Length: 301
Ligand SMILES: Cc1cc2nc3c(=O)[nH]c(=O)nc-3n(C[C@H](O)[C@H](O)[C@H](O)COP(=O)(O)O)c2cc1C
Image 1 (cartoon, rainbow, N blue to C red):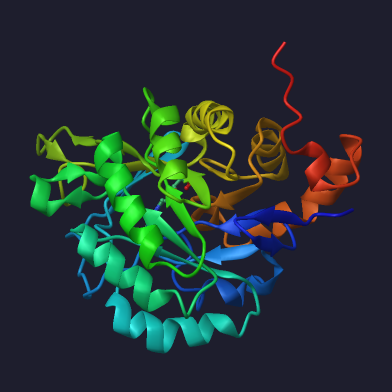
Image 2 (image 1 turned 180 degrees about the vertical axis):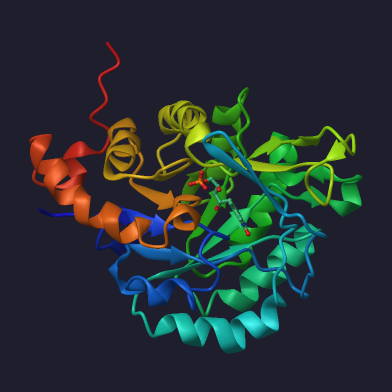
């Protein structure tokens, strides 16, 4: 079975990637599975300076889902470049650095600094632009185009833009990223969500709201991936609620060239290796001998 896939100029040995923020930096997960098995690893969001993240509680479980309000806690660019990347490089697997910032300049500096250290950059645009009154970079096409253009100019590796779950107008967001030079798109990021504590009459999280992930968001992710695949020519990476090989195949059928496993890593640290193990027999069952035969095989009538 040929599991290889091509993405943004990168040849990946299989289409299963680990999603940003859901596997730490690998020190714990690598005790349960071999990180070198995956097509690529997408690291937790990195900003220029270290960030402490939000006060606890940061996680709330919902039926079939998880709301997180981690607040993008991370050790900052310097520690990432000097400690985390050298550790992850031992797994000899393509590394994709997920970045975020409060201003376009922060994204540009991160991109320039990381370009020589990783194989691709994934740009998290579900963050507020502090200089524009907190408007999310990824919520408005013109704003997004300006950011992606600047990041692509600063990059010497492929730039993947990670789109928010915008249910209206996702195709337009995807097209402006493509026109601005993005090499690929990944989607979806978490869905804005709340959980209420009846007795305190407040949020069950340490802050008002967070982001919903896990199986509950898979149908939303499938629909948005379908829209984006139709709208652009660049490769698409499907993310959202994937917990088994069948879920992977569903995204590939819609046209995603790869997928990322997120919350499933928190349900079981061995979820990723189980999915990788189950994928070849499932593909045989579906009558294909390679991942590329399955990609985009969706019949719309
Ligand atoms: C605890 C947690 C932390 C996350 N941190 C990040 C992050 O740092 N950057 C990012 O772009 N996405 C982050 N995400 C979003 C995931 O990468 C993924 O897009 C989302 O969870 C949907 O996939 P899933 O349903 O398989 O988890 C995080 C998700 C979770 C649950």
